[in-house]
Amino acid sequence: MNRIHPKKLQLSKWTAALPRAKEKHFLVTRVIWATPLPGHIQTTLAVEAVELEAVMSRRSQLIDWHELRDPAQWRRGWL
Image (cartoon, rainbow, N blue to C red):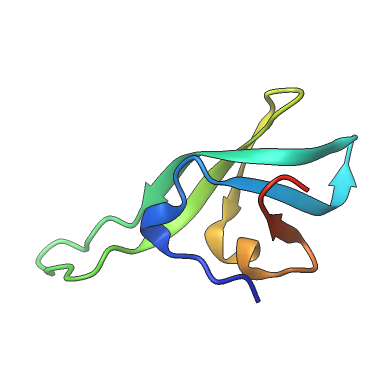
């Protein structure tokens, strides 16, 4: 399992274990943080999703950030 700190997701580099449409290198271009519920105080930062951008085609996709922890789907860095 890939260990990921939420604060270090922005601009991190990832390689898809199973490339789709000849795209395998991605960059995290946006981190989507959870918004606190009205009337609740959020003491920790929570990430909901990340936007990945393919390096070659510039195509973007939103994924649940927990998917990056699965080494069968993603590898940290550009391999």
